Length: 424
Image (cartoon, rainbow, N blue to C red; front, side, top):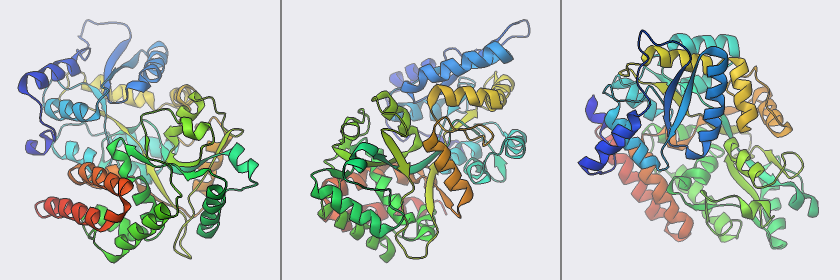
């Protein structure tokens, strides 16, 4: 089992040890004689979230005598290597953020993280956590994470650009294509696209596929379909036609502020709802400067399809602070703590009893709840990381060179075949 936890990156022994020791700083277990508030280390790869984690952790500590302090890593690959190397030892941080789907399943299968089934059952029953979201934290009938946030993937649009050209959010694919044509005719890049970071390669791939053939998407994620399937090829051809028509911006860097969108040089951006704080920090106000809509389906008669993601906070099974860490995540899921989290971050809470903090999120939540919408876990989490990480990078090659779509699919298929041949 432990072999599944070997890092996918190569680090020197000395450097890795240094990172592991760093990961353990601040995770000392409270002793029997310790009194007063307990603050645990929360390791994560979300350096920009440190003020948010710390503010909410301080709120928890002040009110409930238990909280957390962010211990961030700026590089995701290094972070994954650190956690995978320390996960089966007492040096593992008591709390850390991870990824849902296959990635949390790997840690659960190895016995590296604590079973939170009683807690999750309570969150579903009492706080309205969506069972579809909970399932993404499941392995072998048990739950292993607390949702740090819930983000639906929607298309954000610059309301000033739409108003300038008398445009409305589309409800059909035909309207969406007409919208792109209109924007392009006025010299505005209709849609943002990214070539950095490498994970962004899957954004349009997954959304075009679920809105064309959602079952094919699920089959592909589980190794039950090929990247050379005619349906997948058809989606790549559609994506290429959109590239050929000039619907996409010059490739952007997702790590940079959304300046092009804020200035109206790019009209729309397909992203998770966690994108909102960046827009707000860029000086835009939700509802007046930007809005959001659910991407229309492509196949006639298909009900709405939406990608979701949620990063779980997990508890190390081997940390001396395990019991306190379980208490901390349960405290984090209290409605008042979740309300503080929403107010601090502008995120959407997985607790449906906690209201969203702006009209855009209220409307998106209402649309998802009231419509016959099928939710799909994000590509990054839905398929094994041994496929997702290199395949996303491979899809970037298509963004840069659309004519190579068949070679890109061949490369993705080779990655998938190599993995599934030994893991089915």
